[in-house]
Image (cartoon, rainbow over all chains, first blue to last red; front, side, top):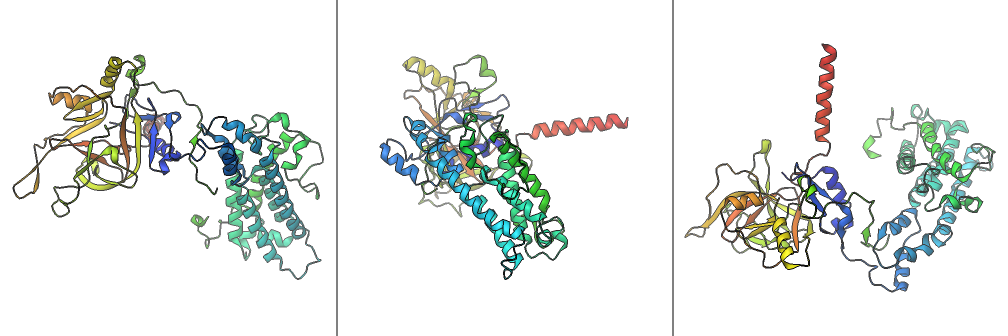
Amino acid sequence: MPVYTQRLSSDLQGLPGFSQGSIQWGPGAATRTSDGQLIFNKNKVLCQGRNLFQNQPTETLSNIIETFHTTEENMRLLTGWKQVCRGWRQHIGPYIDPDNQWQRNLRTKVGSTWQAIYDRAIPIAQKDTSNPHQEPRKVTTKLTVALGRSLETLSFSRALVRGVASIISILTHTNDHLLETLGPNAAMEANPFPLGRAVLQSHLTTCLLRHALAKTPWHSEATGPWGIGPELLDETHMDILPRLQKTGLIEPTQERTEAHHRGYDILQVPQALLDIEDPTEESPELPAHEL
Amino acid sequence: MPNRVAPVLQIEDEPQAHPAGRDAKSSHRTKPGAACFDPSTALFLQNPLIHDTYNPGQALSRPIGQMKYGNTVLAERRGLRGQSNVFNLARVTCVMFFEIPQEDNPSMNKSLQEVTLTTGMEVTLTEHHHIRPYGQLSQDSMKQWHLTHKPKNPAWMEAADLFRSKSTSRQTYTTPVKKVVNLALDPRGNIVILSPDLFLYISASLGYHMRRGKGKERTEVKKREGKCRSTRKG
């Protein structure tokens, strides 16, 4: 009996052509095992729908690419596509190579985002008395929203993940108010923003799933900020990672390689998760499915 | 991303599948061809046996090659314990075209087509496609449709075997078949095919026989666990 498995089905539905309602398979794309199972070879998928890049002059290709937002996800997409046109890899090189436009933009964007949230977080953590009129819980709520939004905007960029996780850890440890609202005992307090904690937890989990299960940078260059090969991991690209050097709370002073930094970065995420613990525990008013 | 673009997605290299009919050694393990129809194969669009819903003003069937995303076809849903014959309209969620390998040499190409495809009752399917007869439609003087010649124990057969058992002369492929078509349906179901002489066949569509990939493994693990427990008890 012809069968194909649920996994194959989801694989098929992941193909771009499926969303347009058609897939064309090349010769030998489907084979049948002795028990009747159908095996699809996705390498043999042919032309899937209209290809905007096909037979376009170079200027048009550039215009199309330039409409994309500078995100890691889009860079992955651009390099994941092949057979778009002759010399596609060469064409996108100027955009996505480590020292070129997109990577520079991305690093700048990550850097400025990091700086902005860092500048907001530190006064809260240090219990800044120069702004006594600000209600601390309200400020903290706004900051947690900003942290989540930054992660989303930058596609959970690994370069930003550790920075955000570090901020969360600082906030959970630095003063009584933050311990009450974000720390491990928050569930026992009259906490005004369980949702904010839940969102943070959800985002950190997403970050872990996206980055931590991949090989560590010193095993492969496939992780971390996209496309930086080990040969380029030197001081030139120190700006790709947010650091907490101002406070010295997290960052040890010892010299480490870029690869080390990137490997340790992701360890900050489980630490932050531990710091906030599961906000849904003992919090029946927030059903898990709302996460 | 502002523009929806659909270039080919690069996927990690997988072991190459054997091209149809090229690797004799592998043919006992993997047989070429999915469950597929020649594009001219007529699919039922409505059920004429349910007189209340049958609309004579609408087409009874349409070639599968003309199907598009969002069209509806008549599908058979398998009931509990394998009991079947529940028909419902299903929406086409994906039309899949499979290219049939071609040889430059016409005589070799003809041989290749015969290895890959089977034809009988003027319906062309890939050899290993699963299909079973459902009966024959006929119209009485009142223009009402009836089902006759319904087999008592209709069993799934491979297309090649079914058409062979019908003792019809095998047709030669005067025009090479370059592609075959299959549909993914929602809800999943088998497709009803109508041959030109109004014989009906139920045909396995893509996805109807979908199963969980690790179902077998799980069952085996459970069995093993059961054995272990009984051994410990003993």
